[in-house]
Image (cartoon, rainbow, N blue to C red; front, top):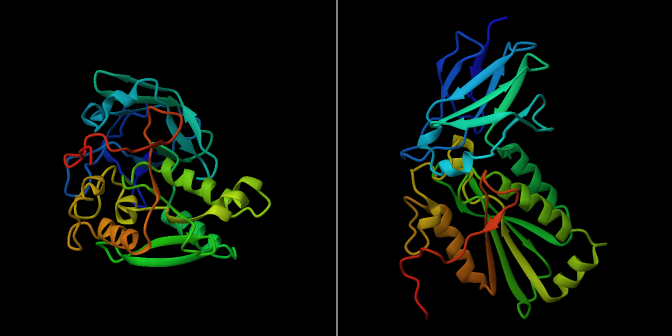
Length: 283
């Protein structure tokens, strides 16, 4: 069976350059939609069972954050549920991975994906808790709902805590974080969560960039816009995701906000702060 590679699915991203030799497969990461950013990849390889395979991503050096490839390990899965790491090397701008697949079909990704289907499962499962309400605060460029969760009793005298994630769609680890956070906050037997909800209400956007996630982008939405740079002056035409989020924040109010990010160089998610904001001052 000859080897084939495809990325024609939710969040898929790869360009096949040369696939004739299983021990020297040449690939490229495709650029984000209407943008020069690249780093996220996700594809399916078929026909490689019991063959020693070496896959080379030859434009890895052009990635948005090439420093992150040092000591990085590519993720792979046979069922898209259990993901494991495969031996990976980065040298002279080329990211190489070598392994012998146990099955004919294997998925390979930058990080364990969090698909749109998983996202829908997350928000629709959350709404079944008496503590949670699911809303749509607007639509993305491509017409998808921007899902928004309210957790708590809505008492306006309590603190208003916001958490948003995945402004950069290729940072799928940020939505995995949201899955864990939501699961714990809605656990009515968790004493810390119960204590928190006595003092505060939570407002969550688990995925700020649905279109970009589905398109297989690293940084931008369907219009090629980096949402993380749009907060000063968002608009419906180019960055509706930020426009509607900011509108809702003004409507509800805010005492605290976490903007959750992640990258391949860290074993944990991180919080984006005020660093580098041109309009920031002491006031």
